[in-house]
Length: 159
Image 1 (cartoon, rainbow, N blue to C red):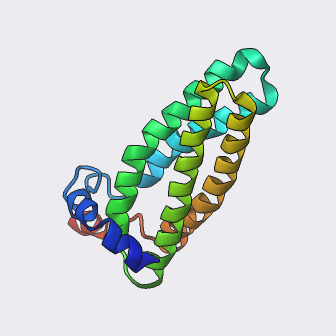
Image 2: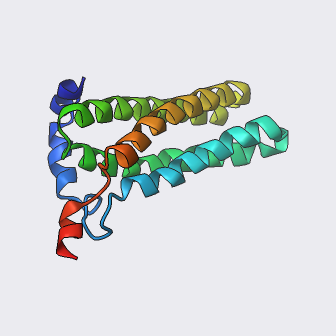
C-alpha cells in the first residue's frame, strides 16, 4: 500500500518536501498540531448532531466544512512527514493516511448531504468519519509518540 501511495502521490510528495509544512523550526512536526483543528471541528459536528436540535444543523454543517478545509494543510504536513519515513513506520503511515483520506471523504459527503437538506444522512456520514479518524489518529499517535516520527532531529542537534 505504501508503494502504491508513493507512486500515486509522487508529484505532490516532491512539492510537500519543500513546502513550509515540512519545517524544522518548531523542533517537531507541525502535522500533529494541525490534526487538533481538523478533528476538533469534526468532533464538534457530531456532538451537535447528537446533542443539538434542528437549530444546530447549520453549526454542524459549518464545523464539518471547516474540518474539511483544515484537513488540506493537515494532510500536506502529514504527507511531508511521511515522505521521510521508511520501513515499518512508512507502512503504518500509509495506513494512517488511508484512514485520514477516508475520513475526509466521509466528511465531504456529510457536508454535501447537509447542503442538500439530508441532515440525517449527513450526521451518519459524520459519525462514520469520526470513527475512522479516531482509528487513524490512534496510528498517527503511535507513530509520533511511540516511534518518535514527529521529532526533528536536525533541530535537536543544532541546539
